[in-house]
Image 1 (cartoon, one colour):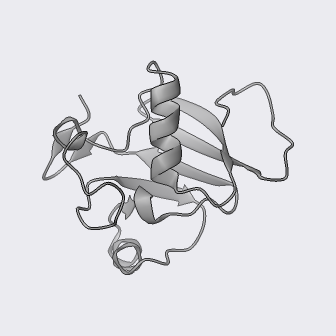
Image 2 (cartoon, rainbow, N blue to C red; image 1 turned 180 degrees about the vertical axis):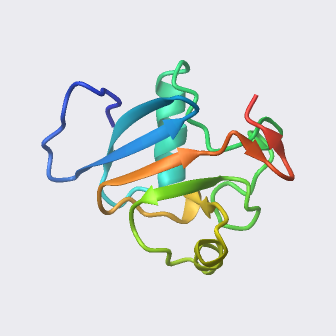
Length: 124
């Protein structure tokens, strides 16, 4: 996975994912078929300056590990694939964040990280 804004990855298995976080935006080149949560966490591990974790501070270590059970990895999908998980279909219908662990990167997309989460607090 690459996280360069200036370079493009022309690999057929690479999908561009634009991630907005606060006033910043970064483009990740994610392997086709990867889970968005995993791509965000990998980019966060690879470059600590990016701060792309979908979790709030309280849930960074306490979460379901991407099984779609805890609802703590929510992101706003600005442009991207239709919701397929039952939670995401409801979230889309009522305007809530979708679970990044249930979003398969299959096409170019734009997502926004939430700065505040009602139950779990902020990202910092």
